[in-house]
Amino acid sequence: MKTRSSSDNELETMGEAYRDLLEGALHKARQGGSSLFHWLSGSHGNAPHGRDSDGHEVAEIERYVRRDLADSARYRHDTGRDLGDWLGFDVALIEQAFWNVFSEAADQTLLALHEMRLQANVSEYHTGEVVGLGTLACDKCNERLRFSAVGRIPPCPRCGGTRFHRPVDGAPLA
Image (cartoon, rainbow, N blue to C red; front, side):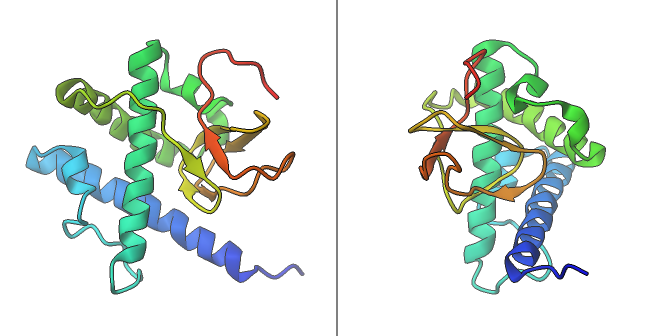
């Protein structure tokens, strides 16, 4: 029988926290009329149960959720393509409930993008950070890493690179 490592447990806990923050912020945004990003900044009572008391880990996860949502909204805005295209793989590989929440949050983020006219800079992703869903490309060699669930970004398996970006449009697969 294979036992789970502490890093597997940590990632599962981070994934649960990512989902909890996203769902909680989306729920409060629906009820309160404030933007989703308002509820994803400073943890306005969104702290997932069982997280560290100083809020550092919660703030880190909030930053990951905001980054992923902003990146997906920029993609939809810039390309006019479906959110499923942003992922870079079949949506069927994602748990349906999580996909529904992420999609709704991304739609709200797209509206906020139009309203706030967010800067159109490319999001950077780094080894060790947590990413929600989708495909990342290594900045050095363009190797693709696919995330069908919340995961911690590993070094590039091809070149060891530690910086990644979302591939745009029909860029060739590595």
